[in-house]
Image (tube, rainbow, N blue to C red; front, side, top):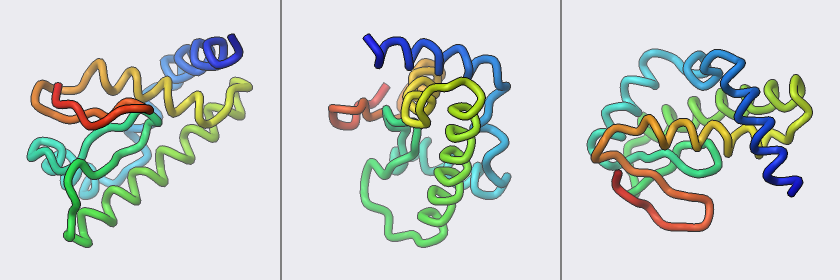
Length: 118
């Protein structure tokens, strides 16, 4: 019950705070990750972070994913501080929203599952 309550509160908080994930990244990192997502190399995860669908030896792409994930972690901590939910719940609520908006052909990995192409 507490997890459901936390996820509900976090979903409301994420919706209320205009796209915290969008401002937590540089334009260059976003462009590189968006291209990698379109190629099926990077996907969204159920915890609210990006992950590699297939291993990437590209250090520039790895750095872009780290940058965006670090920005997301900061945004989730801010949401948690404002709303009283955990950063994990804020990340999971954001992941649900990101999955719903994910374009066809891109990958998502639920918390307890494998990569799935939408």
